[in-house]
Image (cartoon, rainbow, N blue to C red; front, side):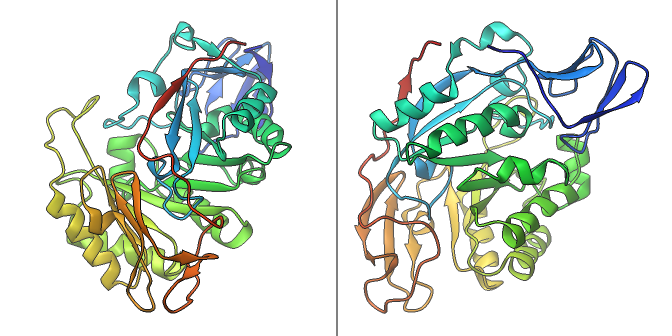
Length: 355
């Protein structure tokens, strides 16, 4: 199966429909697809063209999502489909998210098959990633429901670009999420991503106030685009004021890709500067990513300051958590933990499935 009829649309004219899944609100004539390219109008009704098909599967460390406070050290089965509802010029998965050729979707798997594979191969969770799972909501939802029966957790790795209407259903069966807050200006979202900032902020507010989903936030810092002291100050202050001090924030390094090959890589000093600004604004768990920085990758107790979880890239070292609390002062560490951490390490293991 790859084509199914889906919801989140309404008719706007005879034969013409509007997609209500994401804030683009694409208006589509019969036979036309939205910017995401995977949802389209077929005979006056909305269809999803990538149900049950993926651009690939891989077992990763959960820290790669990145999630540092959710089942540390455990393996996660990662997969995505094709297409995206944003048009980021720096996309690092552009070969999948911008794909318009369905023959790229080489692997097929039913929700039941994915859930069973995770269970049989020790994956504590499954991540909907590579491209944004918002656009394949129905497939992600069915996989998440199937995984629940096996005790496998679901992780949404998303830009959070979704409407108020669709947001509750998308996150209803998710256990964790990493939301990509791409910048903190409307100008950046419009010029670089072809979208807008406010719906992403609305998603973060929804997750914090309306759900029990564990979530972390990631911002990719691009030199001279979203890395000024003023913007980093505003971003981290907004998170502190609206989401609280305990939401983990990841600042990650950009490398030239897709349509931004003229930009240089993000210096490690920029990530450290961003982390310092956020910590000074009251955020307790701020991380650096895509660089070798054991200090910036590790987790510290905000009460007594000892290192709770040591990370060297994706390898875990020192571990000072007991039942989710600091082994020294017993302060709880927000997140989702098991009695012991996993030992998957930095391995990346491709998986080949057939429908």
